[in-house]
Image (cartoon, rainbow, N blue to C red):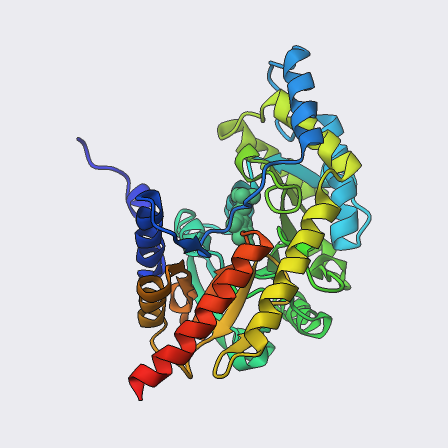
Length: 393
Ligand SMILES: Cc1ncc(COP(=O)(O)O)c(C=O)c1O
């Protein structure tokens, strides 16, 4: 075939080989083995039935046609109301644009603020797609780690040290995937200060905002930040709708108006019946409370079981769908730990180093399993951690 563009060839899988542990666990489970998968970030339950019914009604009701580029008016209205709640800033429909999932909102945000050759700061540990989303825009980025011993909270001094003359944006994610850290108001205020001082955009991925422990603070609500913050939202996690592909971006009206042109050349609008079901789900908060309570209960059960373990320390793990365990006292090489845990106890987890240096010596546990399975997994982990030390001694 003729030569592909360097842009498309440059989008390569990121992270270390942690996904190999996941793939091996998956293959063994598919072959019928009793494997507990704690490596995937997708719900173990279906979309709430009211949302499904809303979609069925909509698709039977002739909603089979093109929709407006920024989203159906009813959907934008519902997204604006959700953004008002999420960010604490009164939001109008012309300040939001619907996208096919949070990932597309992230892509739109990066395309919107960075030119070829511009630079961004990505606060790590981060969601796996972040680096390539910048590469796809021809932008460079510097990864700034959040120290594990600081609960994976962002540090202003470290971010300042990474600024360059061509830095245009900082990307953060709270509640965080993979660490479960919920960034504190104080740390977000320090980040906001940097953005104001250096006239930067803040790209704030808040797709887990309903699954946080305690108050969700959006940096968009901080002084002078609404005009320079783009918030990434999604229905995937909050409303149990990963496969429906619906998300949105919130920002200054002028930027959202520009972004409508991006939808012109990419999505050309979203499916009508899905948009209507999503609007109804947002208006009525279908499943939101139930899903949040489910993850909160799972987190409590799992962390309670883990806190009693010698040599395993919980870091971050305040919100989102994951917990992060420091296992470095047991085995400093997290990949080795994850492989051995899979081999000996049939539990698949992600090695922390897949998500960057700060998470090395950790494992990421997904809470996307029912409570009894998580309890079983915790028991297997306990047995493994104690045996492993005896063998090493
Ligand atoms: C932090 C974060 N941002 C964005 C996404 C993308 O979500 P989606 O495209 O399903 O809305 C995910 C998915 O796991 C995520 O963890």
